[in-house]
Image (cartoon, rainbow over all chains, first blue to last red; front, side):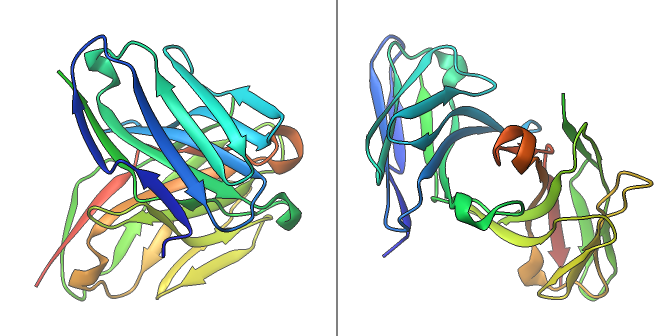
Length: 115
Length: 114
């Protein structure tokens, strides 16, 4: 089983709909992240959480919200989806105990299309 | 703020050719530097990393050296294979000032032809 699991893998929806993307991890890591990937722009950080009670906005948080339900679960919501939120979304985790150089571990992504 | 710039792709090479993907960064602190690889339909995987100046990261025949004087972390491989076809991302993380958040370059797509 994958260490970082994202559901769904693909989603097509309409403008104005509410959407939730879910991420769960079995790595026991405290830190979790949500990114979006757009062609030519790399990955940009949406939200991150250093533990269950510590949630922070990233570079591009407008139009998104998150919930950290447990150490292992971190959900991303689009309250009212718009077409320019069409992208590939990634969840990642990291272990702060590794200090500088701690790598992040990524899920396989959710491809979201908003019509 | 901190940033990462990669050479633009796509890059197309023949099998066994030499590869260099340029990466430069700007940072106010002392970041760690990473190369991640994304194979088609998959998430990103750590390829190699370096945590201080002059460190060399290496993995699967790929190498990159942390050059503080030129603020660079270029990815190199002496002989590429078809299986190396993927998108490569350079990234930095300033653990002590920014808590380990990653800042990515735009990615470079590599296609290796038989």
